[in-house]
Amino acid sequence: TLRRTREAFDSIMLRPNMLVDISEIDASTTVLGHRIPFPIMLDPAGWHGRSHPDAERATVRAAGAQGTVMTLSSGSTLTMEEVAEAATGPIWWQQYLFQDRGRTLELVNRAQGAGYSAIVLTLDITVSAKRERDAHNGYAAPMSPNYAGWPKLEWAVDDLTSSDAPAGVASMISRKATWSEVEWLAGQTALPLIVKGIMAGEDGRASAECGAKAVVVSNHGARQIDTTFASIEVLPEVVEQVAGRIEVYFDGGIRRGTDVLKVVALGARAVMIGRPMFWGL
Image 1: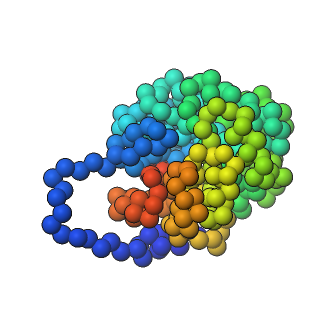
Image 2: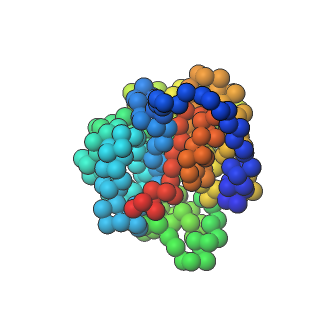
Image 3: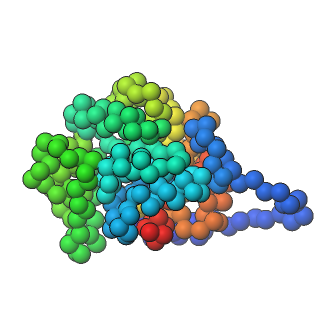
């Protein structure tokens, strides 16, 4: 899927027209009513401290300086409150649906209290991938301080990568969750709900029907379910099924400006980048 993600982008060709007045260019767009100067936001990605000691503080300062939105991963190096204190622009909070609804709401309410303006609900990690490169390299993500004090976590590393058995946070994600759970959560918070991990048109339509305000077409950076389509291949069908009722964002394989152009041309409002953040850090 990782290989296909880049091949799909590279297979899309641009068809330029000449003699168009480009003396004034406005690349801005709006996301959930907030204007950003270009259609690029920062994806939820865990543990920025792997790349720089300032970790998510550096990332959120950069997002604010550029006037765009950062989504903080629940698997962050720093707590959501510490990152919010360093923010100068809008920040969104990412999380999962847990077996214990009280735990799900606990994080949502903490995020709202800390000043986050939207909830990004990741759906595509209900079962953790067997990431063979991570297993080969002996890599496991550390536990995030956002989960400090939660039960069942003291004994388990937050290992979503190198083990076949659920551990840490992965052991608490609900495998029973259906679209009714999304509808429930949308009704429990005043914050807009964004559903991430959509890879089929019918799931985009279901998101709109369940109260989400936006979807992120995403194959999890090609790191979750192998032998699936590239995100860019399914974007048109999601845009069609959503039919303008909610906003559509995109991630997976964005490496340069022409990639962003292709995504916007195919109907998304903005892209979210993950890997480039770590290179920047």
